Image 1 (spheres, helix red, strand yellow):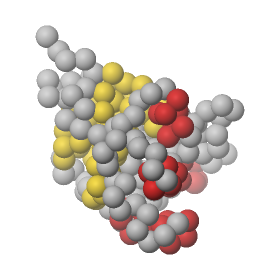
Image 2 (cartoon, rainbow, N blue to C red):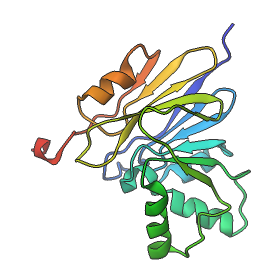
Image 3 (cartoon, rainbow, N blue to C red):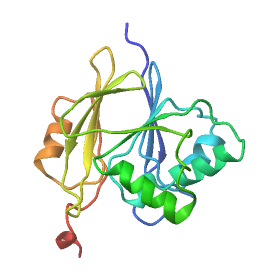
Image 4 (tube, rainbow, N blue to C red):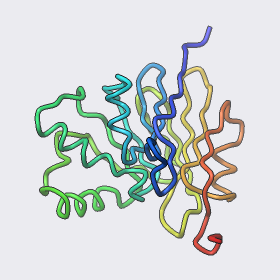
Length: 194
C-alpha cells in the first residue's frame, strides 16, 4: 500500500502571465507539502485553494517567473497574516546573494529572515524537503544556473520536474526512470528564439 502523493499545478504560465493564470508553481503533497517554484500569482492561488501552509519550497532558478512570489510572501507574513511555520526554502547556488539583492531593491535587508529557513543546494547533492529526497541536476536555460529536480517519496516513486530547459543531458538525468515527468516547455538558449 502506497501513501498517496498528489500533484497540483498551481501555475504554469510562461514568462508572461496567461489571462487568469499564475507563473510556475507545483505543489507535491505526500508526508509533507512541497512547492516546486513560486512564480507571480502562486501565493494567491495557494490561498484561494486553501493549500497553505507548505513545509518546503525548492526554487529551480532565479528568473522572476519562478521565484517572484517570495516577495509578497514576505509582505504577507510581515503584516501578520500567517501562512504557518516558516517553510524551508531551498535555493540554487547564488540564491542567498540574489535574495539579499532583491531585499535591498524591493524591501528591507532582513525581509526574508523569519519568513523562510533559506539554504542553497548544489548539483547532484541530494537533500530532504518535506519528506521527499530531492536530487537537483543542472539543465540548460539561457546560460544561467538552472536545475531540474527529482523528488522521490519514501516508497521510491519519483517525480521528475524539468524546470525551464530544452533537451539536454540534465533533463535526461531528471527524467530517467521517473514515475511521472512534469516537463515545462521552454527554450534552452536565446539562440533558440524565433
